[in-house]
Image 1 (cartoon, rainbow, N blue to C red):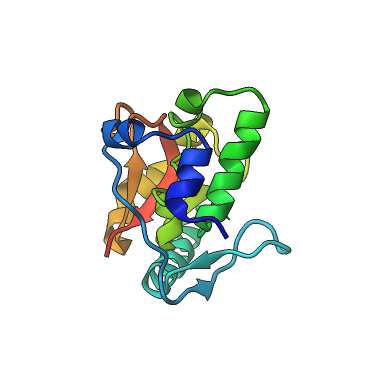
Image 2 (tube, rainbow, N blue to C red; image 1 turned 90 degrees about the vertical axis):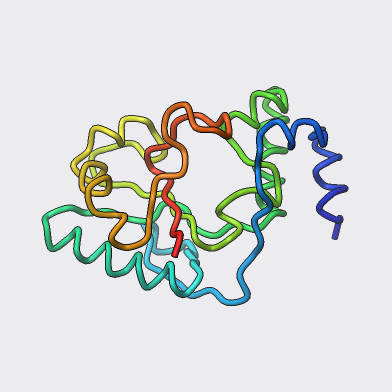
Length: 170
């Protein structure tokens, strides 16, 4: 298995790029638990505190008539590198990719505390999610469960707007 720094270099990501993005390293949790997600055949894992908060938030949203589901949760640095490799193979530049994807070792998904959230009637991982009742509910209630949206418009990391990406901060 390749060292993380070697993996980052192999992808064409320089130290200057990392510094410019003001990213902080995200470490994998010691423990994770399974949570229910959109697809029955896919594994969705979160750090235990994030999982408990997610389950409670999801149920409370449902009790209020709002269906939310997990699209993506924990992912390893190796899988993050694979995502970037696939985008490079499609002809994207590393600069373009880093506007939408974190380098391996720097994705909040590595922490087991990040969750990409979706709802019925809206395309997954799409800006249109901001027009959903689910997004409105999240903006009003997610903080009570320890979640906040990581990448609003004009965020300090230079990532595109991601109304679906929420991080458990407790």
